[in-house]
Length: 247
Length: 366
Image (cartoon, rainbow over all chains, first blue to last red; front, side, top):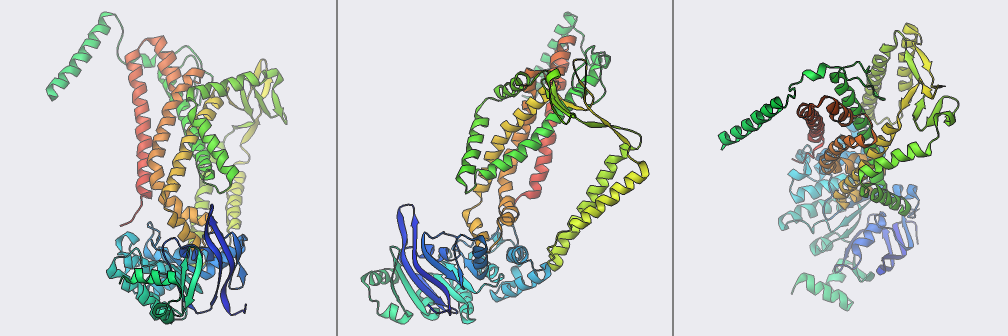
């Protein structure tokens, strides 16, 4: 594969006990590419992106991120985690720290940048996710949508080249989904490489370069959003799309 | 209702006093000034057979205090280590921690105290055949003997100088932290700590010289004299209390860390935080609010459990005061009242300190 791919996944296998969650996955992502991954629950889509920053250890195959192979070497894992940001379904903000402290913890302790610079950087990103005025509040004082935007800002403060989103809007009330998606669209427009597990089909159509459909641990179909939604090839894809669109 | 209760209490007190008087039992706390007429083998302050019961009470209290404070210290250290070890990814480490906990929390404490005591006095040799190391450390069935020092004039200032050194280190540590936050400097300030140490030590030596002389244990007659000695009773009690309580603390720490949601670990990992920072900044602060209240109970238990030492004749409060002193004076009501009051006071003091600490670490969320 050529060097322009920022993520190269080849022949990836992953088991949970006897359960084969990921079966021989091959996927290459170019720098700046936006990929939306969808599929029924239990299809392995979250596990796939969690393997990319080694929250899950893969059992077979190779993952190469930005030229660095993901193996058990702590140095490699640390390097890859510094390049890859992640946003979780449940936000996972640190509840005992203010919004600002959440955003500066990693820059100060991982990169060793001065507190004042980290503060300035954090405020800049909080502005980008449109909540600069909440910096001194605790996560518990914010709405779900605001918390998720803080979580995005927290990841951005490490200035990653790749962002992973694991169902970022699934835990949100409907009226808050839009504000989070807007931030994600902004991010996409600024050229971030993004892998996003989501069922927000509007977002996929608008932003994605490619949509990947997974079922039972395999990539069943991948295509441009227009082709994927308007002309699905596989029976399982058709069934899935008919279920989420709800005809 | 209230009147009936007061009436009942009054009747009980009146009845007791009347009965004691009719049997010619002296009441009141006058006995505290009398001579005890017996010596004890571990005393942190001056005491001999001509000392008063008041003095004896203080000696017993100090013996209870020293074993409790040291026990709490060791139990906490071991407990945190074992608790964190039980969460280790390493199979062997977590299983060993599990076995440790199950052994020490499931055997009755009294048995454990007797076990360590019997082990010490049965396995260890007589004084004449002591285990020795470099002719200054000795271990035998009468105790553990370490080299110590005697203070000469000027020696008393050592504590203040150590305090000064501590304050200096604290200042440097805070300054280092501020610098780190201000401009991201990560270099250690070991140099500064050494500098402070040299200044303190140099100043002290130039002012007072070396106001200490070595006090080495030496065999005289049937046993060792001099040096710093620990009786087998003290060692057995301290070991038993520390290990027993640490097994409970280990479980409390484990529960506390597990109470923090998995997402917190994952978020920290995804940000690339090293595991030490994850523990110190993210997990422990959240775990402490779950850990502190039951930890306080364990501290109280340890303090009160130290009274089981009466079984091996460690001269703590219950053993010498509620035991020997009560037998000698017959002042049961007063002595039990004093003893209970002291335990109550110690427990309330511990609770107060821990609650204050708890309020400081309590999770601020809103």
